[in-house]
Length: 331
Image (cartoon, rainbow, N blue to C red; front, top):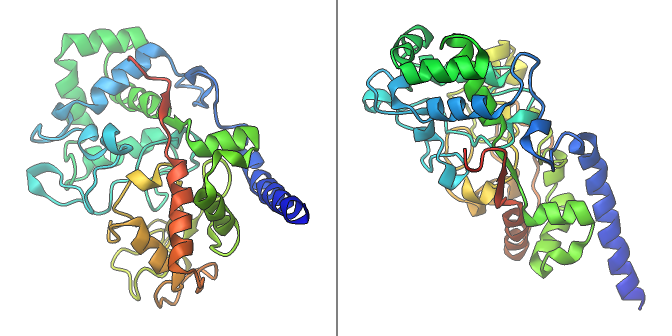
């Protein structure tokens, strides 16, 4: 009886700790239809805007040689990533970083792996203008789309203005904000507080996530990120300086945005450059405390996880995969 009670209190304590992190942002996560997703004052979410944004997101005409679209590097079937280390842009040119997933961006305070864009609308301009990605630029994008009368009609219905840079960036922003991942086993746990939704390995993995594994130090709350930037000691010397490219501060060298762990089992390969191919290898990196780097976060240290414990931790991470999208089904 004593063992059962001890186990019960361990689970409750873990849940209480986890929820104390989660409740800081839990009110931001919609468990209602898409109209409750936060949006800028000049870009309220409507069905007409979502439809237009989704069409533009999938239109290859927005790349210089009309070979790729936003959707080319963000495939819905694999959590809006593209399964390769570095994506290929126009004319076979390689991009600069691994394509991040697009789920739950409506709740993010910054965008790109270095946080270089402060809004989704600004983030959209990056790949459109990058010579290694879409290589087109907004002026030419507008020129191409304004030749299509159906785009003009959709723009007027959605925004009461002709197709232009405002309409393109705002409508795609609207669409991206509706890409909400939830309905994971993890969500059942958060909503009910009942750890019996997990099997034994998943439950032990949660304990490791909260305790010995130290994952919660950076991956907390409902969206499983602290929205910060960390240097995890991936390289002794970084070719890509990460956040420092934006701040021009050497203290940010090698720091990259802490990603959400939602759908993490579906978004391989991992890291800013896609250099780690599996979750097993990711955990191995953290388990040895990362590599040597002068600016490595003090949150990264040798964990001493056994092989069995790492399997249990992965079992928990697999419960973060969502099965439902809110807000654009059927659009």
